[in-house]
Image 1: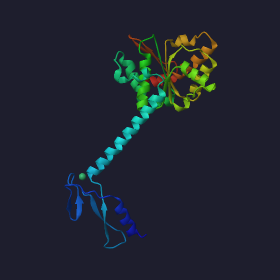
Image 2 (image 1 turned 120 degrees about the vertical axis):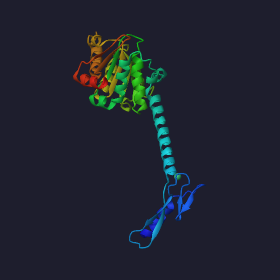
Image 3 (image 1 turned 30 degrees about the vertical axis):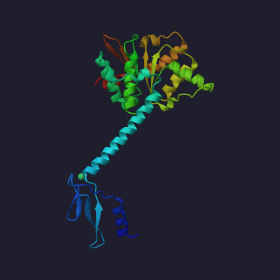
Image 4 (image 1 turned 90 degrees about the horizontal axis):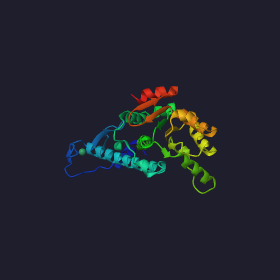
Length: 276
Ligand SMILES: [Zn+2]
């Protein structure tokens, strides 16, 4: 096939669409809506006096194509978010906790959580997790899940569950009674209500796995960091030490005040980002 034939073949592939209102000017078709040409004359290099009419897309066609591309991308995004929500959130109540439902009772914490989502790549780089601690019913789980849902909206795989759940799941999987949740599928793990679980070797193994694989950890707990440091048994101490190290940002959630504690260096760098 010579160049000429090849180009002719090419020009046939682009479909010329003539709509009502389209018109010809200098033997070329123009769009009746945007008035851009739908055809153009191309000179053929090295083929004197030979010209080729090629098909162009007018603005309306380009806009339509872009609209379709965006609609497909949106559809794909929604499919991903649905999948991540179904696979990442252990209980339906976690799904309900989103920034849009925040009653702004503590704007400092809301700001910190939003910044955490916004700066997630840097937080990952620093391996800086968050611990929300304080009394029951002050919104610890709410804030942790707001972050989780917002990250899922950004297509980040997040698992929200309890340590007890993960332990039970692992024990069941060992006795072939269920599929094991693979922590590898997630980039961020949210463990709700730390401190209520039985501290077994399996519980420690799970925390250690999260620690070694450098996944971001977010926990909620009724215990304060000092209580965790003074845990009564060696097993608890081992688990809590890991958690305290992984959660560089510690946030007291109560109705009166916010106190951000930075026990370690990366916490201080993170604090400046999260409070910016
Ligand atoms: Zn047009």
